[in-house]
Amino acid sequence: MGYFLTFGHSPWGQQILTHVSWNLLWASLFAGVAFFVAHASYMVLSAHRKRHPAETDAIEAARPDLPARIPRHSGAARAFHWVMAASMFTLLLTAFLPIAGVKFAWVTWHWTAGLVLTTSILFHVIHASVFLDFWSIWVGPKDLPELRAEILRELGHDVPGPKPGKYPLGNRLYHLAIVVAGLSVIASGLTMMVRVRTPLFPRNPYMLADSTWGFVYVAHGMAGVGLVGLVIAHVYFAVRPDKWWITKAMILGWITRRQYIEHHDPDRWVVGIDPKSRIPNAKSQVAR
Amino acid sequence: MAVIRDVMPAFELFQPASTADALSLLGRYGSDAWIFAGGLDSFDWLKDRIKRPRYVVDLGGVEELKGVRERDGGLEIGAMTTLTEVVRHPLVRERYPILTDAAEAAASPQIRNQGTIGGNLSQDTRCWYYRSGWSCYRAGGNICYADTPDAINREHAILGADRCVAVNPSDTAPALIALDASMLIRSASGDDRVVDAEDYFIGPGTDITRMNALQPGELLTAIRIPGDWAGSKFYFEKVRDRQVWDFALVSVASAMVTSGETIQNMRLVVNGVAARPLRLVNVEQFAKGKPRNEATAAAAGEMAIEGAQPLRFNAYKVPLMRNLVKRAIRGVEEWATS
Image (cartoon, rainbow over all chains, first blue to last red; front, side, top):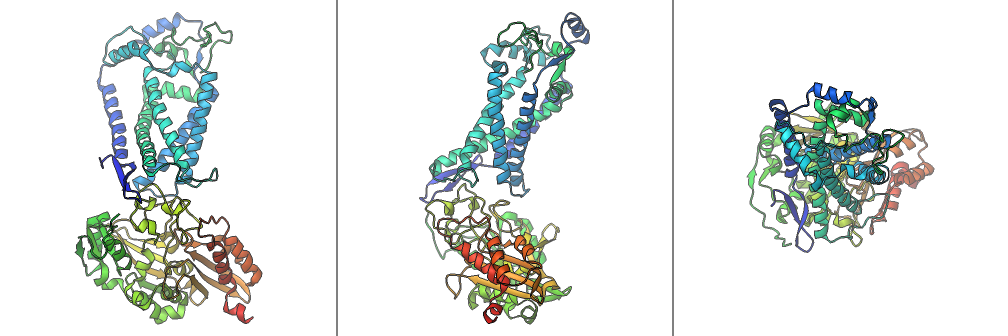
């Protein structure tokens, strides 16, 4: 148990949880690196199926109504993404560099970045609920056929089954994982802020019992080390040449017509139709 | 928690005769090794069974770490030099009486005979919550028991607290920072380094489990004091509960160069108010070029306590620090006779 969690003693001699063991940080780091080595090796060595260019040419020729650039992310969505990324990197670096031996005064930077992350996520939740197609990023039982088709394609089979809507299945699964880890780290982090001195509110170390605080710290640590692996995986996919078009869209806001046709199911991501009403939209594309 | 006093846990004792041997042992055992100098801090930890090192490296037999030598117009003091030898050394008394005062104020004669200057600088904090073995931040836990609403925190920090509110207990530290000293740190790996005394001490924001820059495998071997401040006007004062010997509630050390009644240059350090001795750079800058009088001292005192955040029982440290800074700038004897 000590390999995963650390324990201490309260003033009453009770054994209490204090933190996750930092062995888990190295485990998460190793898992993230191992994943990208394994995935990169598979992509290089496997018979990963790609659509033939001629096939895409034919589909593209059949859709002359589509504009050359398909809006994918609005300015607000891109701003959120990069603010969130900056705050996440700041959080991870300020949390784990000191553990890795790089010593500096990290606490104020850490909670400040945490507040930026919290604010950006609140904005994202409101923005996605009100202005975007909220359900397009989530996964559920309805996506099982797509999961099966994706796995078969990864294994080299030519599968005509469903292709993704706006977000590839991998994106949606990643989003789910980051929601769980991100909300856990934010909820526990905001609670922990009650224990440190900030100019925002009076600290209250007695808000929870020692043992309960231990669970909060462990939750924060678990989510934190989990995010290390998740962020490694995200950065890996962001810089992969075959995924660069997605990263580029997060910078520029649009993808090309060819990328749209090649990677998406036009029936599931309808360009030119308001995604909420499914009524043809005179403004053409709706950026999400 | 059961505390068994006077019966130390078992450990393997090494008594090297040279610095090289000591470094070799520290390199071999890393964070499992405990550096034992005069033993005054160590025995508390060991007898209370709060710290349980597997290997203890006793430096008492390393002669090359002892003694005071002239070096580059200043002095080099071996880390294992006893406080008594520092106090009595004629060159220290002549050039740096502030260090004499600080080392003398550190403890009783018996403790000064046994305690070393390296140990006085590198000793751990006296926070009793931490020293009782509870799982506080400094001990690797997730709370500061001294910074809770009903904590007894009369001796704790009013400045620079970052989760932990423990204070640095060293008396020689502020004097050496005022003298612009540097610490020679040698390493088993051969990566020797010289660190400014000011940077030798680290606060909880940087590393909450350590009070100084020593890493596992490293050893403070000497303190180098430059000749720049020799013969300056010095001031050291330590306020404590018991005059016989006690740790400082607040201490102040200053080195000052004056031209007539004008302060030309100065270094000013307080201790006992934060986890590391605090050099008051803003106050130094303010005082430079100003007349050494009551008005300058009063303004400097007010400036020194800006940002102080007292705990439940240590608000008295705020006026105490203010007045000590005031006295360090205007002087006591001069003021009394003027």
